[in-house]
Image (cartoon, rainbow, N blue to C red):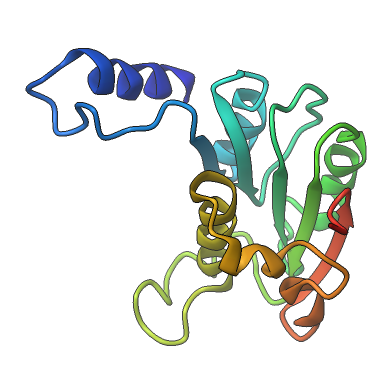
Amino acid sequence: MLDGVTWVLDQNANNPASALYQHVDPARVGATGHSQGAIATMTASSDPRIKTIAPIEGSRTQTNLHGPALLFCGGMDTTLPCSGHNTAFNAITTQPAMLANQLAATHTNWIAGGFGTAPLNPFVVAATAWFRVHLMDDTSLRSTFYGPNCGLCQNTAVWQVQRKMMDQ
């Protein structure tokens, strides 16, 4: 994952022939992935170039994050159950963090549908909003995660949420 970040940033800075050339803000890099990709996301989060993460259905303890973390799990996931994500969530003590359990998600059922069609996939919607808030300064979506009445927190038919350092 970090090799990919290095490559993208190199293309941005040094390759005028690249479609990425001068189109990437190196101060606004986030990471996400599913399952083993989520574990790779957690590992990559120790790199100071990664400003926020949203691993989906995979986690590991990481204590030196460089920005906020939204850990996703699926309430019906028997491969990597939500209970296993609590250790990773609890280890985060220096950055805002959320553990969002999409109650009806198995390890893979969320992948197949809802991309660009109604109903939109809850993981995709939430991860997109998370990155817009943290990498694009989208204040209109901030209340989805932050504040006493966060949108994900209120949507109890879809989500069960734990948060820390996110009341502001």
